[in-house]
Length: 357
Ligand SMILES: [Zn+2]
Image 1 (tube, rainbow, N blue to C red):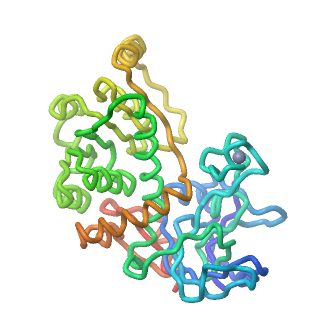
Image 2: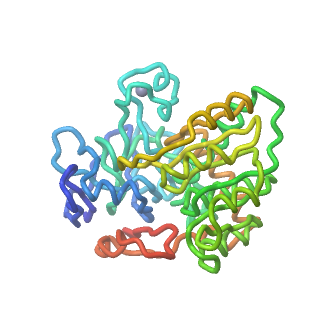
Image 3: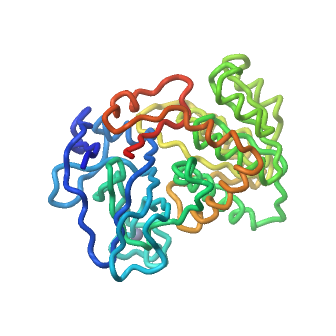
């Protein structure tokens, strides 16, 4: 079968390779891959910045944003049948920390976890992939066109779930949210918060009138462009908010986000910033603000199985409420052979996917 592979650590090594179709044991499931999302992590693995091949193998099959149809089921597997649509969980437990032992692989404390398409486990950028049934989430047929968005949505579900858990320290009825960044995470977060009844503003670089701003407006959120106004002016016009999500990919904005939060509010940081940027920050002011205002800032990565399950319900609600928005987020679709084109980000892209079948 065809697969997109990389030699981890080697710059621009992504290649279309012929590899054997995975053989499954009695506890595994073989899946025909129908959609694979491409994200910044895939591009960075392609650039050789990280990624690890499975033990004793030279290459890693890319792809952690999966969706496919069950093609073959091991004889000990129950609850999954041929023809069913599924999405894979990305992270697998380490050999046994207190969190992985209780199913909270997303909170692994050793860092020795495994991740499909990223670290020590082949991903889904291939015609077929295999997995154990416990790492597969069933998707209703109505969601097949947009199911590849479940993985990024699970990250967003976890972010809001944690904010609510943290805010159990008080009586929290959030009304206003600010999101930095209008990539897939920013847009999906805006949808989840609009769906929860919050007044949402999204700050992004591009001028209004593009695909992203149209989607933001369609879901009833406000799109604010830093190409038209300074960030200071934008933050002033929005006023103090109850929940801030930083998803812009810029560490400078993480600190700006921290100053935008109101008293008793919570800031969630989601950007993976691989660089070594240094900035000067008003340390006394930020510290005083957080102490006197009972403020919290937290980071989040990956998601738990319950966030994927919650994400399936959210996808159903989003499709009912805004039927054209999720399909509109998938901006380009390519077969595996055109992976090089798919990896090149265009300015109006939101989510680019590969369609192995
Ligand atoms: Zn662990």
